[in-house]
Length: 165
Ligand SMILES: NC(=O)c1ccc[n+]([C@@H]2O[C@H](COP(=O)([O-])OP(=O)(O)OC[C@H]3O[C@@H](n4cnc5c(N)ncnc54)[C@H](OP(=O)(O)O)[C@@H]3O)[C@@H](O)[C@H]2O)c1
Image 1 (cartoon, rainbow, N blue to C red):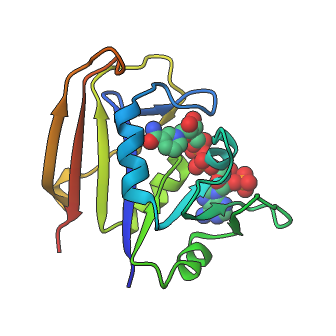
Image 2: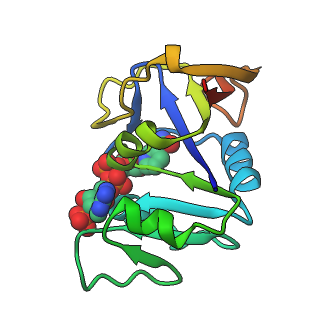
């Protein structure tokens, strides 16, 4: 069985995006994302795929959810359901649910693990939000705080959770 992991960066008001883009540039968060997901499968919604600046993420099995039967995504697999996506990844040790909101809503019900980056700022003009997390279902296993600096406009925290058995 694969470990199903959510990886997301979430602002104080649960904001995750605006106009099909991220709301911030946090290079150290991108570095962590790359190092955690490289060599694994990443599952994303069609809109998130379309927002990637350089298309499919290299050195990862890219799986794109879409209801459009004819959809073709370069260097990626298209799947018409989460069930199909998970079947396609059944031999992977870890499958990362990388967004966006629509995918996170489905993933939150089935994930074993969450790698969250809490971005300590409220983005009033966001249009996409992470679903409410019931923290009573999760155990925090790691936490690291970082201040804002010249490359990171906001302070942020890396937190890892595993689902309670
Ligand atoms: N902060 C973060 O960590 C983070 C991470 C990722 C994305 N984002 C942001 O999130 C926003 C995009 O999120 P979103 O919720 O609008 O879109 P999304 O989840 O990326 O994509 C939604 C689309 O995925 C397809 N889809 C989702 N679940 C499906 C299923 N079970 N079966 C078949 N198709 C399925 C549908 O595509 P069709 O319409 O083609 O059928 C749906 O319209 C952007 O602003 C992006 O920058 C933020």
